[in-house]
Structure formats: C-alpha cells, structure tokens
Image 1 (cartoon, one colour):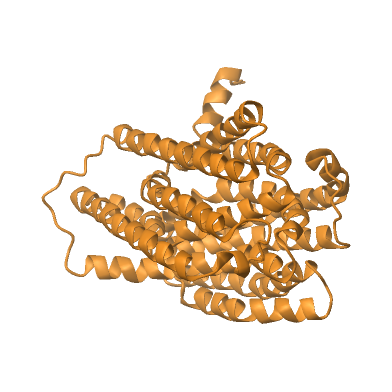
Image 2 (tube, one colour):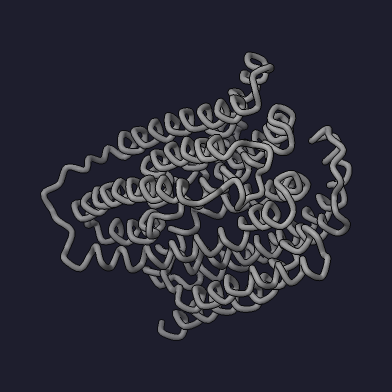
Amino acid sequence: MDIKSPMALFQRFKNNHVIMSGFYKGVSGMSLFISIPLLIKYLGEDNYGVWVLVFTLFQWVLLMDFGIQSSLKTKIPVLLHENKIDLLKSYIKTTYKISVYIALAILIAFTVLIYFIDIKALFNISFLSASFVKNIFLINIFFFCATFVVNIHKSLYVSFLKGKYAEESLAVNQSGFLVLIILAIFLFPNITIDNKLILISCLNGFYCLGVNLFYTIRFFRMENLSLKTTEKTPPGFIPELLKLGSKYMLIQLGLMFIFSSDNYIISNSFSPKDIVPYDSVNRIFQFPIMIIFAAISPLWSMFAKDYVEKDYKKLLSKFKKFNLLFIGIFLFIIVLALLCPFIIPIWINENLEIPSNLILYIALVTSLRIYTNFYSFFLYGIGKLHKYIAILLVSMILKIPLTYFLIYLDFGINSVVISTLFLMIIWIVFIPYECYALVNKLKKNE
C-alpha cells in the first residue's frame, strides 16, 4: 500500500491553490480579528468608527477600475489557451496604463469633492474638526490610489491559476499591519487622538504599498514574463475590454453598495459610535466569508477554462461538491452564531450593547452570501452577466429605501441587515438557476 510521507502530503497541500488560498485568508482573517480590539482600544470607539468609514472608502476606490482588473481573470485564461503570448503581454501592459490614468482621475476627483462636501456633517462626525476630517480622508485617498495600481498583481496570479499567491500577499499585508499596530501602541501610547488616526493611516498606507510592489515584482519574475512586445492590441480589443470590465465594475460597486453602505447609513442615521457593535458582529462572520471566498477565488479562471473547453461534466461536478460542502459551512455558521455572544466580550474587552437578533440576521446573510457567491464566480468567469446585473440593479434600487423604511419602523441598526436579507432571498433563487441553465445548455449542444 502506497503511504505518502508527511513531507509529501505537506508538499501536496502546499501546491494546492484552493487549500492554500483558504489557509492564507485564514491568516488574514485572524490578523484582522486580533487587530480590531487593539484599534478600538487605541483609537477609542468614536475614532475607530471614523477609521471604519475611511477604510470602507478604500474598498470603493479599489473597485473604480472599470472592471479591467477583474477582466484579466476571464481574458487571460483564454489567451493562454490560444497561446497568444504577445497579445497577452500587450493586454497586461494596457491594463497598467489605464489603471494609472484611472488612479490619477480618482485622486483629483476625490480631492475636489472633499473640499466641496462637508464630510464632517455628512457622516455626523461631531468630535473632530472639519479641516482634520478632510485631511485624514485625503491622506488615505492618496495611499489608496497608489495601491490601486500595484494591486493588479492579485488578478494576475489568479489569471495564471496561481491564486494562492494573491491571498499570500493579503496575509502578509494584514499580519504585518497587525505588528505595526502593536508597535504603535507601545511606542506612541500618549499622542493625541488626531495624531493616532494619522499614524495608523500612514502605517497602513506605506506598508500596504510596499507589500503590493514586492508581490508585483515577484509575479513577473516567477512567470519570467516581460511586457516588452511590439504587438499592439487590436482596434476593437480595448473597447471590448472596457465593455466587459464595466460590467464587472458595476457588479463590484453594486455589491459594495449593498454590503458596505451599512456603515455610512448607521453613521448618518445614528452616530459613528453605533458602527462599533454592528461592525464587531459583522467582522466575526467575515472570517468564514474571507476564508471561503479566498478558497473559491481560483475557481473564477478555472470556470472560464472549463467553459471554453465545453467541459460541462467538470462544471457540474464542481457544483455538486460545493452543494455538499455548503451543508458543513451552514452548520459551522450556526455554531458561530451561538458562540458569538461569548466571543465578543472576550475579543473586544468592552461592554458592547448588541441589538437583539443582530447576530441571527448577520448569520443568515452570511450563509446566503457564501452560497450565491460560489455560483456568481461561475457567471463572472464565463462573462454571462446581463441577467445577474439586472437583479443586482434592482437590489441596489431597493436597498436604501427599504433600509430607511425599516429604520422608520424602529428596527434600529438591525434595519441595514434585514434589508440585505430580503434581497439575498431573491438572489438565492435566481443565481444558481441561471448557472445550471447555462451548463445544461452546453450539455445539449455537445
């Protein structure tokens, strides 16, 4: 009987991009899990709420790329399959050029916008001066725009079916930032709150930029890939790229709007301090989301490859395996929901007042989000997005009025989660059905 040695098993797991992506995301999640109570203690609840608002803005900035980075994960597997290496190089080079232009446009636009909009009043930040609020947002926008360009390496790793390195870079970034937070607490414990916010912003900005630069260089060396090529992209290539990319951007912005606008709604309707209990519970359930999303992220390009090759059997096999796996995932989330009231006091070490049923609502949203996201990755990979975008647009239109209606009915901060839960019920019916319909169409056309 062939018994594999521990070292052989270790190498097998190490070379499995799905398993290692999940592992690295676990490291990222654990680092984030530890860093949150440290930041709350260091900044205070009010200023931590401001940091959450700023960091959420960072997520919005990274999505404003017209989807060209997401398009890499769909287009590159096809170009590799067709062995069009020079066109691939030209495609990547064009992506970097467009990203630089977009980053500059975002930086200028946000700078102008911040000086014309009273952010302090918009987000109900009464405890900081208007000039400081503007400056803290500007500092972070600068770093986020710079990171925006070098962040392309994550899509490149996934495109070349080496998704574990994209998650490895996130793990290095998050764990390194945790170390920097600890150093800040020990070295600068008594500086003013204003300076603490500036310090955390600069530490996060410089470190994140450095890590992304390192992994960008590492990708091109690993693939022995140079962007030197005389081939130009075909005349219709860039419009086609932007057309597909715009769909991905619309999807990403839509998802951010639905899942990340909650912090801004809470700040506007209540106060930045009220973000803390919602964010704390949400972060606990982000842990399984982060791990599972990272584990399935390499499937984006794998789905694209299988669909191009018309391998419907492999696609159906992936669907079946995930459906079985989801039973275990759902049971884990139930256990996590039961443990959550005991975890929060130990984790945060603060007497947070958690609204009744908030944990239950977030647990349900988490479960539905994981299930629909797997099937969404299939649609992303094959580029069949029209119906998906339609349901997403309807959800975006309903999100805000539904949330404020629930606030009016006195559901408190639970309103932001209940409104999302209503929308997710629609998704869980539509998205898997669309995926199976497309795969069965492949089967019929065999």
